[in-house]
Amino acid sequence: MNTASIVQKLWNYCNVLRDDGMSYGDYVEQLTYLLFLKMADERSKGLHRQPSPVPPGYDWESLRRLDGDALFDHYRHVLERLGNEKGLLGLIFGKSQNKFQDPAKLRRLIVDLIDKESWVSMSADVKGDAYEGLLEKNAQDTKSGAGQYFTPRPLIQAIVDVMAPRPGETVCDPACGTGGFLLAAHDYVVAHNPHMTKDQRRKLKEETFKGWELVQATARLCAMNLLLHGIGSQDFEPVVVGDALAADPGERFDLVLTNPPFGKKSSTTIVGEEGKVSKERDIVERGDFWTTTSNKQLNFVQHVKTLLKQNGRAAVVVPDNVLFEGGAGETIRRKLLHDCDVHTLLRLPTGLFYAQGVKANVLFFDKKPASETPWTRKLWIYDLRTNMHFTLKTDPLQREDLGDFVSCYLALNGKGMQNAGTGGRSPTWSSDQPSGRWRAYDYEELLSRDKASLDIFWLKDESLEDAENLPAPELILQEIMEDLEGALAQLREMAGDLGSEA
Image (cartoon, rainbow, N blue to C red; front, side, top):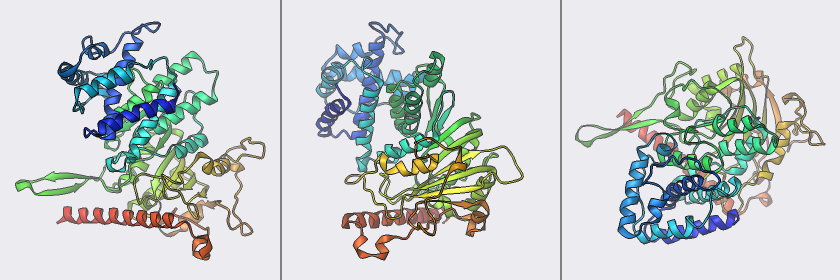
């Protein structure tokens, strides 16, 4: 059975369960518990004969042989017991609950859909891609808010293609969501290194990838997603549930690839006497940070710098405000340009993310040893935003839309061979080619800008020049809505700040 037919089969059943009030997210979560138990059962039999991490009496067989209320009762006990286990079991089943309303529908999912497939014998590509398909469908359900944990896969693919992880390099995502960056990095290493040794393959599975995720339910989906792709084991948990910004974990990585959650401020809701609700701003104070701020995005940039090994490489998705905000923002940009080699910025078009009203960029930088002279020499900027229009449904971003950026970043020559480092790059913009999307700015030029702003653009908006070049009405409407959503989000933050200071 191919990926599309498996996704369709599982998703069709979700529509049946929605009549019982189960959300897409609840369905994917329940599916995760049952798939894990089925795969553990398969691995304990036949040629595999691996000892199952699941305690006897709480395994797949214990569910398969029951029906009706007895099945319902036992399923609840299984989730409760496994949620108290350590290791991967605890990560998958922690805080799990039965969301089914009808024992017959639980029975049907177990016997008719999951038990009839051999999941372990299915290739990692098929079952992993099937699960990814379910996560993407879940992200498209805008009411659930699951889209905030889902970065568009074509964007992830292009970022990983230019970062080019190698066997033996460690990869981290401190805001891993459902694991898109980690999976793409894994697939890149496998595809580009077909002759890895047995030890290299073992390290790729158990020592290479590490993610942090604040939300338990999302971390569960990430762990299962990685497991279905062959990453992780009962002895190696690739995902940590917790606030990545809380402290320096002490670990250092060769690559950090991340799309931190959107939303500027960090705050804690406090319920005081007589039920009065207030918000307390969370200003992260860490000795390894350049400055203190409650801006979550700026803190993630500082955190990524900490996580990198010397000469480690980072790609971070950041909203526009990180590029131009004053105060702590200016301090961080100046320090980043001096202490790291901030060599590339990709300006992203609107309409890419499920979180509305977001104008984002990808910032690429390398961590360098302490130096009196600045490490950044040139910042190369690729503008994929001006005169570019995408929508999530009718005209979604494709990998080929990022092809020119990837070629420019890698400084590919006509034969598809990479020139040496960033020194081989050539701008596509010039006074004779004013429509070129790729150009460089020197360090001195960046520092002389107001607040050392990196929010730089030079292309003319064609829709302002010529009415014939206006985008389709639905695209204009979408961009207006996104701008309004962004403005509303900022107003809510301001109102929240004023309320907390009252």
